[in-house]
Each structure stands twice: as structure tokens, then as C-alpha cells.
Length: 147
Length: 258
Image (cartoon, rainbow over all chains, first blue to last red; front, side, top):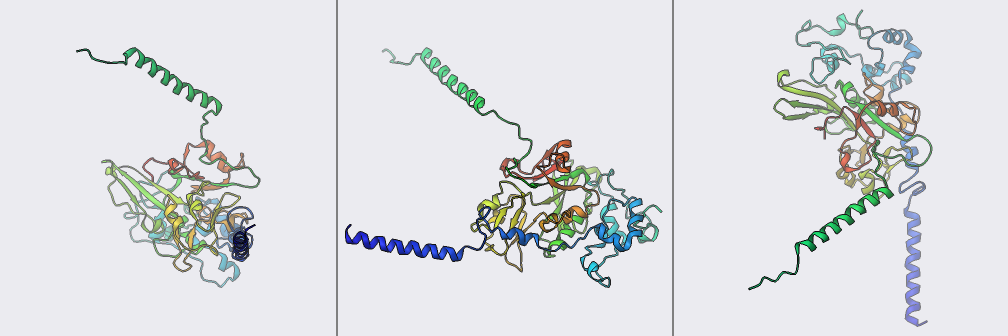
């Protein structure tokens, strides 16, 4: 083998070797295990904390109100739909992040007249005319709207 | 003077019939080899085990309360500014004069007002939008570093540790479902609340929906709710012509919806 080819081969071997070493250090752990991504990223995504805790967690202390709600027209609506996420409240009862919304704007988000809303799924009222100026929750208990 | 013309009309006709015969025969033969199939689902499930998630949205049931959009922001720490959304609601109003108005003030979080007269409206409806969790996602294909991927259970996720924030996927997504997180400087998108579904909880937007307009489920489970939903309704996916393999099935999707 001519000398110049031998030298070239040595240079090639060094470059390829360097590339392999660099590649080893640059590619993160678990990359390529299941596809062209870092497999650990799935576990990282899954490890985040859930903030909306579900009705079951409300039942532990407020069973009476949950039962009341389940008998009325708002039965299918989750507690946290109106009261907001419960995770902080579940850690400490004193936490004040539980919402107690009311008022014409809030109720109107579902119940104000709008052509785009189907009558089959929500009762609509003319929020401009219906008992002007009064807070909805003064007459309607949101946990049992028709009592 | 005689006109020299070698081609007789008779020969031309023969040639035409011959070529036409070959082409038609060829098409018939190829279709016999690989028959055309009706595509019931926009994406065919890959081989494997475990759940393969998809979503169903019933447009008729959506009342535009915006609970989904606001709960998504709270659950996933999406910035409050009215242009960062993982999930939002659009209101389509098709006027009698065929004008189409699309509105999504603050993604629907503050509710929707009706600013046109009832008599002028031909049709009006809400369209909740979110990531379509496509099986052949353009966003996954363009990522130069492999920071966004289709998980084995069919959820398109982002590896925020690995993302370089190049914004290529934002351009690639035909549904506008991605944004750059202003603090993290990496891309953010709907994960179908992956941290919730692995714990057996529904995604936040579906948990708080007052009418049950959204459902999610395992497309491999032939007895599951989502399969029943697609069976019962005539569902469409958004921009099916782009062949993204979307797994978000809409019932009652109007063709004006983009």
C-alpha cells in the first residue's frame, strides 16, 4: 500500500473515531429507544401534577353539596367547572383559591341568549331583560337551580 | 399539386383506441391488485398494544362557555395573554348574505356576545379547537432535533428539555396549535393532559365541559366510548386533504370551518 494512502487512512480513522466519541457524549440518555426522540421525555410529561382533582376529591368533605348538585339540573357539571382547580385547597383547607363565582356575566357565559347555542343542551334567558340588575344566585341556587 | 399526407384518419383512430385500451386496462388491473378502500378513520392505527388515544368533539353540544380554554390554561400553566392557547373555542357565524364571521375573543374564555341581528344569521355555531394529535404529524416530521414526537399511545408530545425553540413546528402545524412559551422560550402545545390521562383522569378541558361535548378515548378499544361516538355520528377531521392523519373527530363539522 502506498504511503500516502496509509496516511489518509490514519486521518480517516482519527476523524471517524472523534466523531463517534463526540456523538456518544452529545446524544442524551434514552434517545432513540422507541423512535427519534428522548424516551425519558414521556415520563417527564407524565410526572406533572394534576390541578383539577375531580369530583371524588370534593366528595370527601362536601358530600352533602355534591349529592344536592347531583339531583338537580347541574348534575353533569363538575364542581371545578365553576369553583376552579382544587389542588391547593386539597393540600390546605385555608387556601383561598376556590372560586365562588356568581353574577350575571358568569352565569351568562352559558345561559345568555345566543344563536350559536343549541336549546337542547342549555336553558337560555335574555340576560338584558330578565330581572335586571339582580345577581342570579339571589334567586337560583347553582347547586339546585330550580328550587 | 397533390397534398402529401401519410397519416390516414383510420390509423390515428386505431392508435387512439389502442392507447386508451392500455390505460383503462392498466387502471383496472392495478385496482384489482390493490383494491381501493373506504377510509373510515383518518388515521389507521399502528400495530401494537395498549391504548391509542383519539378525541371526539360534538359541535352541536358546544355552548361556547369557554370552560375548556380557561381550565386548560390553569392546568398547564399557559400564559394568560390572549394569544397563547393550547385549547380554545371559535364562533362561526354564517350570514344570510353568505359572509362568514369567525371570532374567538380571548379564546372564548370570557364567553361570547352576539353582535349581529338574529334575522341576518343563516347559521351559527361554536367550534372547540385543540391539537389534533395527528398520526402523521407535520410538526413531528419537521423537528430538526427530535424534540417533538408521537408517543406510543398516540399523543403528540414536546420534549421541552430538548427543544431548541426554532419555531419550525409552529409553521408546519396546519391547525395553529403551537406557540413559543414566552418564559421557557421553547415550544408548547396540548399534551391531551398526558399527566392526567396516565393517572386515569380525563384531560382538564373534558373534565369541566358542562355538556360533554368533548370525549377522548382509546381508538383500539372497539367497545369504547370514542369508537361508539365515531360509529354513531358522521364525523370529519379538519383539513383531511392534508393527510395529517388527524385523530380529532368532529361531529357536525361545517365545511366552512378551517
